[in-house]
Length: 80
Image (cartoon, rainbow, N blue to C red; front, top):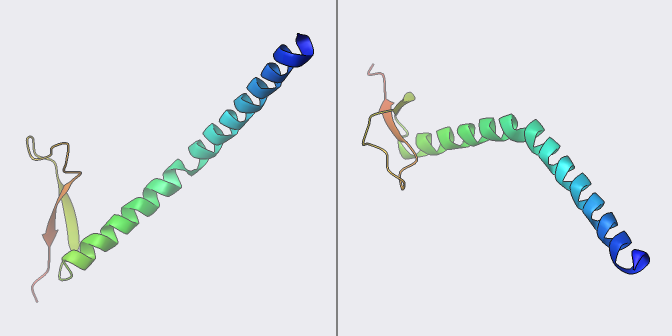
């Protein structure tokens, strides 16, 4: 019983625990980098949509955001 059920189960549990720990560690190390790159990418998308805008300000008004809207930004441009 030890060699056929318990030993393989224990080995599988240890492998899964080590892999889970490694994934959690890598996720913690790269979380800030991924967030920064996502923000930069979103900024580039906003610039493509509103190509005359100089900057974007995120609006934080109650009732403005729903479960289908991730964020609302106000685009501003300098008039020369």
